[in-house]
Structure formats: C-alpha cells, structure tokens
View 1 (cartoon, rainbow, N blue to C red):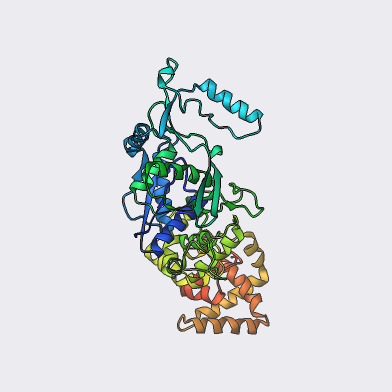
View 2 (cartoon, one colour):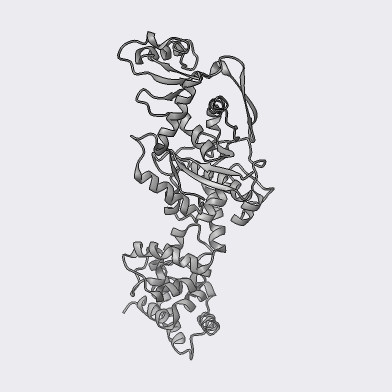
Length: 467
C-alpha cells in the first residue's frame, strides 16, 4: 500500500504556525514511508477565501521546504462530485430533505442553551414525507446519523475514542442553495485522493466521528486517523498572536531560517530521545506517529531563537551572505556590488558566532559596506576621547609602515603598539573597534582588520581622529 497524506488548509488567511506543523508532520510521514504528500486548498467558503491567502500558503510551504507531489486540488472546483455523493445517499435512504425554517432552528438552539446542552438538530424531518413541506422553504440535505450505539474512532495518537451516537446529530450535506458542506467535501476528496492517513489537530476529533459515519454509510474504507495535540503558549493557554500564532512569513521576516523553524516545529509534540538539533534527513529517517505526544506542546520563542542561532553558526557562509544581501540593501537603500558580497562572505565566520537571527546578522554586517566617514553610535563616540585618538594616530602610523597586510603581521603590530603604550590589549582594541566599525560590538578585532584590508582600515582609523 502506498502511504498518502494530505495538508488541507482553508485560504482565509496566512499559513499559521499550527498549520505549518500539521503540514510538516504529514510531509515527513509521507517521505519516511516513500509515499505521497498532497496539498488540497479547501476554498468552499467563497466569501472568505482569497487569492492572496492561497498564494501565502504556497509561498509559506515552499519557504519551509515542504514540497507536494501532485498539482494542488481546489475543493470548490469539485463541488458537483460532492453533490453527486449526497444525491446517492438520498437515493439510498441514508440522507433526507430537511425543511426546518431558520426560526425553528433558532428555537432548537435556544432550548438547548436553556437546558445546558450543546445545540443540536432534533431530527424532526428525518422520517417525514416531503409532501408535508411548508411552502417557500428551500430544503437542506441531511445525513441520517445512527441514533443509538457508539462510533469508535481508532486514533494512532489518541488511542480508541468513543462517541455516543445520540450526541452526533444529523449533519447537513447540501445547503439550501445546493452547495456541499465542508464535512461532505472532505470525505469525498480524501477518498478520491486515495488518502490513507489523516494527520491533523485534535480539534478535529469530533469531526472524525462524523466523517467516519459518513464514510461507512457510503461504503468506503476508513482512513487511519492521527489527531495531534494543539500548540499552546508558554503559559499553557491556547496559542495566540502574543505567543507566536503568526503566519510563516512573519517568522521569515523576523530572521528565522526555514531549516531552524522546521526543526523547532518538529520538536513541538514529537521527540526522538534527547535529540534537539535534527537535520531534515534525520527527521525523514526517524519520523513516526508513535513518538507524537498526547499533551499540548508549548511554544517558546527563547528556544526557537537559540535553535536559530545554532543553525546560523552551522550554515554555509555563502548561503548566509546571499540571505542577508537583500536585507542590507533595504537597510541602506543601496545595491550591494559583488565586492561587497565577497567582503561579507569573508567576514561571515566571525559575524555569525553571535547572531540569533538573519536580521541581526545583516545589522552586524553593515559596517562592512558603510561609506566613509562612518557614522559612529553614541557608545563608539564615548570611546574616542583625546587620549584614545592619540593612541590610534600612532597605531595608524605603525600599520601604514607594514610591508604587507598579512593577518599575523597586523595582529603583531597591534599587540606591539599596545605594549609600547603600556596598555592592555583591550584598551587599544576598544577604541580601534569603534573607529573601524562605528559600534562597540563586532567580530574579533584582528578579523575586522583582515577583512577590511589596508586602505579601509587605516582610512577609517584616521577618519575617527579629529583635525
């Protein structure tokens, strides 16, 4: 049997972080088993579905590296197929026309609320003859759900979950205008797409019971269900925007690497021993449903930031330089030339050691492409007092006399200057860093001198000396 999973978002907004994790788990399970991962856009809500949201879903999936195996399915385009199944159930006596008015349905809801029970349709048209239908009411088509007994959902994460059938009312299959409902469309699409495993949030668990009843009434095989716990905030409350319930594109814009976010989402509710840093290849090799936990995972920005820093430190220098190029260009309002890019790549090994995000990496690289004379920040200015400038003047003369700009020779010259001035290395390195970068934070000072080269280094030092 070929394993087939699917991700089925509604295009009513961005690809949020919970949806991204669901997509990842489905993608990994398919890849682990050599199966197929399919994408379905559930665009039956025509008022709220937008092209912009569809594009955001596609872009978010691509950025995360979650490729799908066939052309995406658009649910609305299959509405006639869905309606055909409803009509088939009508013909078989497994569904019926319901003529209950809006007023009657409102009355049912009010009564249920008064009796402290969930609102449910009372089945009043289940066995009535359509000839009794009131004039002017367009009927909906409802499914004849079993009235007694239980529906058992065998879930690969939650275990066996039992639902009393009396609590599951007769759901609508076709609305009064003839359009199919979500519940019907999902069942038909999953069957026609040959989906074998449905991995989704546990807020769909009751839907699974309803959909299973419908699947069995049609006579199709029930897929395997795996309902994963939702993501909560660090405080245990339902995930909200203040916790991190943002679109995937927001994480990209905040400077997270896709591979780091993918790793972090994997560990939200799934584990492989004590492993925290897990490559994509390892994730595909190790992923299984058995290691998905039953408890809600807690989103923690500090952990994500730490993991992002690890991925940045281990990333290829050229890859990072290319990533931060457009960010630097936005910050500076100028286009970087190939020489700038080479300079950034040369400095990357030192730059990435402290970086926690791509954005902070770009910011720390600005000194490399800054025009002379540098604009110094306040802390850098405070270091360049009269005494420090006199020391830098003598250092610049010493550096200018070097026969060649070799990193070891430059380091020796700086150390010799500190010794000649009777200063500890830090006392000369701090104002030197301020002069070279305009800030008080940078890679190692000898790395900075090496990357900037003779002309830029000496020029920046002299620019910082008044008069």
